[in-house]
Length: 71
Image (cartoon, rainbow, N blue to C red; front, side, top):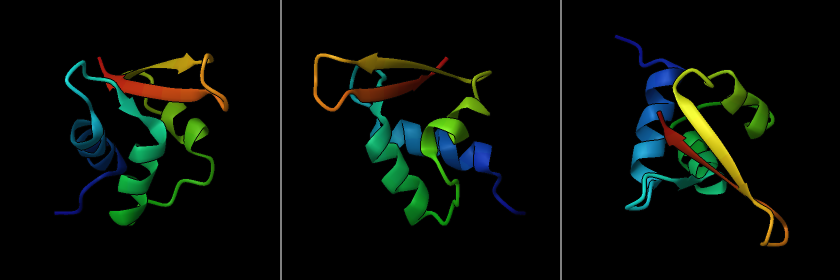
C-alpha cells in the first residue's frame, strides 16, 4: 500500500514536534524530502492540509520562523 503525502506529513510533524506540539517548518521540510516527498514551496504545500494543521509565525526571529502542529 502506498503512503500518501498526508500520512507522510503527519509523521514528519509528529517526528519534528517539540513537547508543545509545534514543529519548525524547516525541520519538517527536511523530513519530507528525506521521505521522498516533492513539494515545491513548503508553505504552499502545507496550505493544502489546513484541515489537519494549524500554523503560526514567530516574527521576532529574523528571518521569521513558521511552525505547524496537528489540530
